[in-house]
Length: 84
Image (cartoon, rainbow, N blue to C red; front, side, top):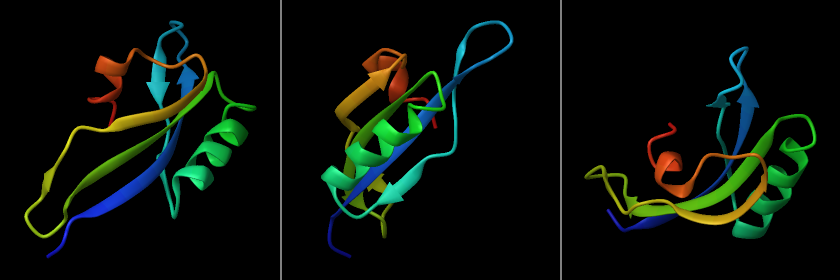
């Protein structure tokens, strides 16, 4: 199967302890749509991030996520890779 690029928007919420926790990720069709959705999600969350990930769903091999844009409070880039 050919490589594909997924575009994702994911919110982050504050736990009772004040830590950031990832919400449900939403897949979108384009990078621009992911940025717009992340911006919208950040209005009701601590923050949100738009990112892309490229790989082959058939083999399950994917490159590291590439952060497109952050809004509000989100974990450092290294922590984002293991968020979900």
